[in-house]
Image (cartoon, rainbow, N blue to C red; front, side, top):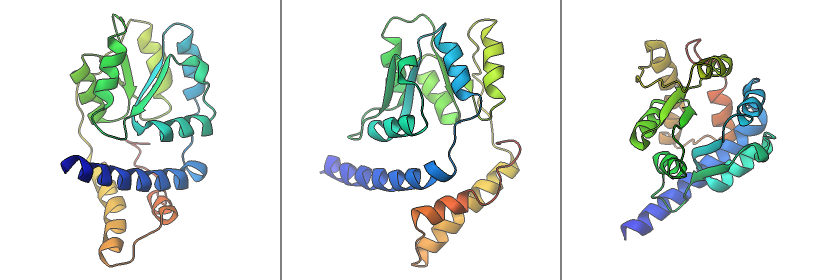
Length: 195
């Protein structure tokens, strides 16, 4: 029974996420300018993998939509739509392939937790300037930014504003479309600390 309920919730989540993802992908989501160049550079020295919480088929569509070169990666792993697999599991799978050191480059505090859980190093990328910073850090070995961080008050206010309005509209019986939600989230720039 619980597995059936989970499957229903996951299907709903995937449908909503997919519609938001599609609405945002063409209009707003673009790779950081330095991303592809940095990946091509890193692929010359390192085995690269994608470890994502995004469902596999959505991840692959995003990957192709943005024109990333699959040949630069040894594996592209998204989450399992049936559940039971997270980024830590994917990182452990990569680690089981015999690597001495693994660096997980990602953007959230939860990603840092996944890296710790899997016993791998972590590097936070939240802006374009982090790509050259990563390349520079790698000149001295594998970096490990293992300290959690807190959101600033400005970031928390921004997050609250962006989440509260769509929720209020839903509660008032006026749910926003995926395109309206995407436009709302992108209607003001991110705080400098995030951008």
